[in-house]
Amino acid sequence: MNKTYKHTDSDLSLKLFAVLSRVIDMMECKLLKGLKDYGINLTEFGVLELLYHKGDQPIQKIGKKILIASSSITYVVDKLEKKKHVKRVACPTDRRITYAAITDEGRELMEEVFPKLQAFMVEMMRGLDVNEKEKMIEQLKRLGLFAKKYSFE
Image (cartoon, rainbow, N blue to C red; front, side, top):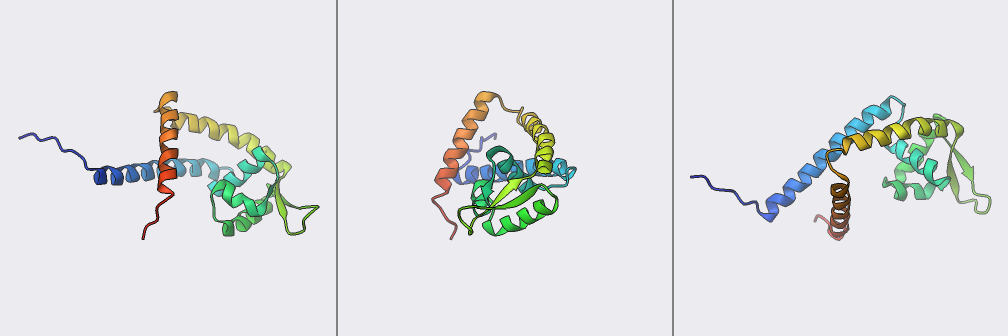
């Protein structure tokens, strides 16, 4: 007897989570290997990319913009400062605020790394056409906004 198994909503929800997790893990792993050649990790790249494209940023606000814990930002900025990719700049109007600013060395690094990362992303995403990418972005945003309302208790 050849029965077709019909997945339940519960089965599909768990499977979707597992597939999304595996895809993100695989992509991050590939990105990390490439960034390692430049002596930076994914979080450091995120900070550099923000500063490269958006300019100086208050250190206290970087965490929200690149989605990492604010407690980690000081550590990441310290590491980037030691590598001479970032410098701290005091706010002239408010002594409580310190900005992170990309240095010339950091800018040179991003001018080399960013186009390569962008081309790599295009290659990794070639499995979907433009319409599929747009639809997936829309669906994942909707899923994220919906999931945001829930907490595991």
